[in-house]
Length: 195
Image (cartoon, rainbow, N blue to C red; front, side, top):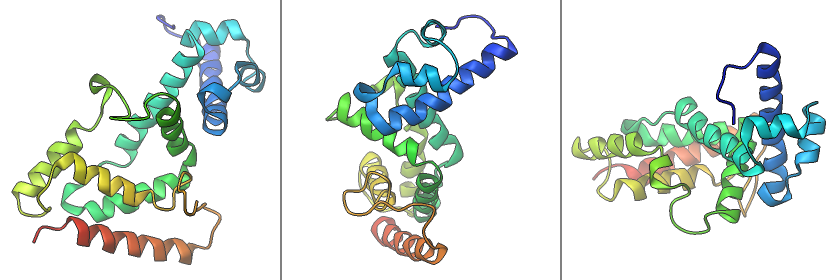
């Protein structure tokens, strides 16, 4: 693993590895991803990849945990408007379908039950506090904040790349996405509003 500052050339190689490996893991999963394809497409070698990430699993972890952080930062929760948060999650899945596919591979290949990541690696404390605060303010229905969060996320994934019903893409007509956004917004509002 890298424990020293990278040169600009090394940083560029590191970034290429992450970009190529993200697509490789999203498409093939952990078991199906091939280091040989990653290093060829990233124009580097196995020694460099292993120096940066330690192992194939270490590379997946770097990508996967980076994707979790991206979702938290790019789509921050607004517990006073969970319906809007759900729509913003839907839009992020359209922009970056690879992120939801990575989470699905982690679920399938690593953690078939329970939380997707170990407790120390979970990034939902702020979300859960925000939901609990909105409940206290009378804005969000009663219930376990984790279960409410899980429900909103599940609703936002109704047309995601891992849907077992229909996987939407950003290439579809914008009117169709607007219809889905409206349905999602109204459904989450009805399900989560207190009263």
